[in-house]
Amino acid sequence: MAELVEDLCGDGILISPGRASRPYDFRSTPDERLARCPFCPGHEAQTPPEVFAVREGGGADSPGWQLRVVPNLYPAIPRESTSDEAFGVHEVIVETPGHTARMGDLSHEELFLVLSAWRGRFREARRDERLKYGLIFKNQGPNAGASLEHPHSQFIALPFVPERIRARARALQGGEYRLQVQRELESLDHLVATSRRLAAVSPRASRFSYELWVLPKISESRFEECDDGLLEEAAALLGRLLQALDGMLNRPDYHLLVHTAPFGEDRYWWHFELFPRLNRVAGFEWATGVFINQVAPREATHSWRQALAV
Ligand SMILES: [Zn+2]
Image (tube, rainbow, N blue to C red):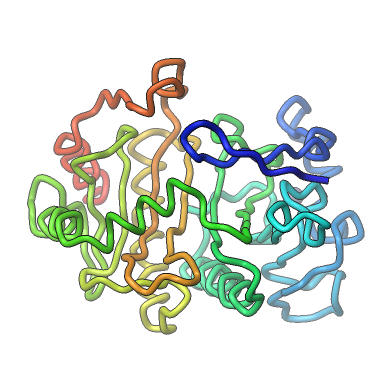
């Protein structure tokens, strides 16, 4: 049973003791990890029944899939609860049957399937009127908080909008912040790459070294309203960026986040946020919310462009 409490600033804290019993992969050898991986084909019985899959053959919860979505066996937040606040959705998107691939190793078609599944999770959650907000997040590697090696991302939907997200939504509703994003899209100091409708920028206010935002050039509120054409484009651009990241920093651990409008909000600017975990977030950052970034964003822009050109 989870409990939601608020700290002095209104930030929510989920007390979720059940999470502690989940397995932690990275203490074992690669062979051991492979043998007992709950996300590998043939091990479907080790997860809760799938809620979505893309498959060429086989029935539900059997091998033959290309991508699988299952409820998290150790959810941070339970699906049903007596509490009004501490319930929601916590799902795992198993991105490929291949155990050792990284997202940057996936083909364009595989990456497109992942993005479509992400879009589908938001669409599905929005149908439940009690849910107000959803986030897709990928923790690549143990330094980014992953507990299992097999390529996967996660979706959490909540019956409330977290304070930090509310602040983002407010900022993106105001003209000034939108103008800043617009300026970055047009600045050679910040623009890393573009495709027809999307751009990747190294934002002026990057909290992390090499932080990148990928967003539509013309503001759109909801990732889940992307058409297939835009998802194809996103898969192509994201694939290039992930390969560049792996080349530039020797396959680092990283986070990839999908920010879309809270379900009740109309004005937002959806974006992917991508950043490697090179430094630990330490005492000063936790205490103050002020991040120390050791790579100037315009230097990061230069490094990204070089890595993309290889
Ligand atoms: Zn596996």
